[in-house]
Length: 460
Ligand SMILES: [Zn+2]
Picture 1: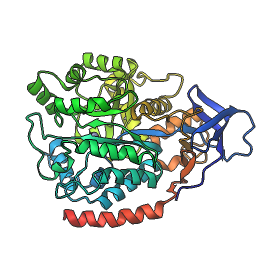
Picture 2: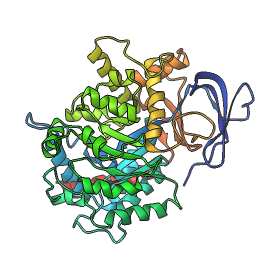
Picture 3: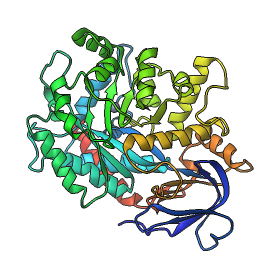
Picture 4: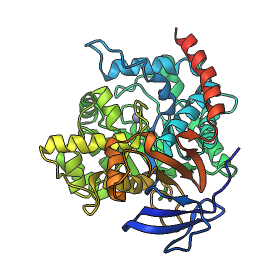
């Protein structure tokens, strides 16, 4: 059951596109967008936010089912690498049924909301059943994602993934990996079904060729007619050195150069990770308006490498953060990791900021929300008229934030905070988290608990 709609919110301080503003009245329209933004004392009739109000964070890269991997893949031997992590991830893929996918996604989205993410882009590549047949409803698992997002109350951009081969040699998908493959007209059937679902349930639909190792040039050509202006296109790019080398060996080009040579990359595109590119490639990406979706906690857990964040920001590059493997579900933690890796790489604290008039933490939060909104194709990420009423209200009485200015509190939250400093999370004008608790917490935990037992039994 959806929580009741709020009429609006009176914010003692709010982070607007122009900076921090005091005494802001936000009034919400029936469709969950912000209808008006005014300053002064005319909001006496509205619920009052005494703590700083931030735009909700955007999660630009999620594989929700991998929330069930956390803890199962952190016990390592010295030989473990990305590819052995991947084998364990694929083992989980082999045991998940539709109820499990929905329950783990619901729990994952709850966790994201608790930490201030109000939108998620779900990069969804699990399509076939465990016997490798299409479900009677070809979009079964995609619809489970839609149901989970709706159940949790998080804004959704669904990115159905095209994944057709095991590597640059064109090998067939085998074992549980074969659950990813859609062939012939199957991908179109899934997309058409999701288009019709959107008439009933609001969500944004994009496209995601998984990576260049997983799709061929003709596969990408097949997607081209659907890449209309405004449709988000996401692709994993240059996450691993082995992937870059494999692409160069097979095609003579690195993944970034290959994409610019053979596809029409625009500012609707998001390159996920883009860890191993060269300086010229980063310039080309920035000039095209590509958003870099960075997932530093996952990239750190997997030992991927370091994206040159300071140079990217200095060049005006657009960036978003993602929870990817779900080892962290906190936007603040991702931004903190980006900030610290930039300072470590530069050997100084004063690294480039997307908004120098704000503290680093607050500036990164706002930029990631704004650029993330572009990446996911939704009008979110800014507290302004016409945008979704997606807000994070910090708790002014939390000891970490007491006595601080709004900008200092934003920085403290990003660099030192957790879910504990969040008083309320609002999505589309409705409160979904209040004082650390999701409004439908009992049901979500009950469904997850049953799924956790099924998954544990299936993996044992
Ligand atoms: Zn990913």
